[in-house]
Length: 189
Image (cartoon, rainbow, N blue to C red; front, top):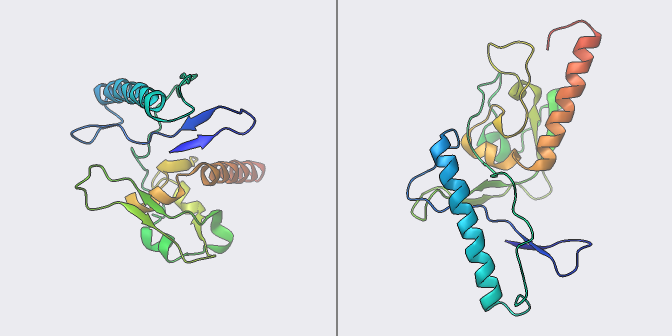
């Protein structure tokens, strides 16, 4: 994926979401993470060389910057008081006063390999959205802790929809507001 950069004429940004590997990589294994960094940087250099050689206008292009950190889509998720499911997402489930975030982004699975069964987009009903309940941020059996972002309590497919930045920001904002209210009322989170 290639994007222009607002306010920076002549500059483009690439999103390179896949690291080539013969087996799935474990983001918790330091050897796999090191492999991903090395392979990712090699892929970026190949992409730069390709653009310079094959795309008009890139003849004098150069690599200005690489992301300092890997973007990990999937690692661990908590088991919470509620597990957000793909049925919740595709059914556009609402949670009323317990909702902490709204999302209309599709289920977005990147296949682990070209032969993998799961992959692609599963869109929600046009014009509709689903909500994430506060209980999905609350780990089962652990008090005074809220978890936000891609590691909340959810199925693999569901997580692929809400892991986008705006929804993660909203979960974090709501977790902070909820925690502050609980402290003000001398109650446990």
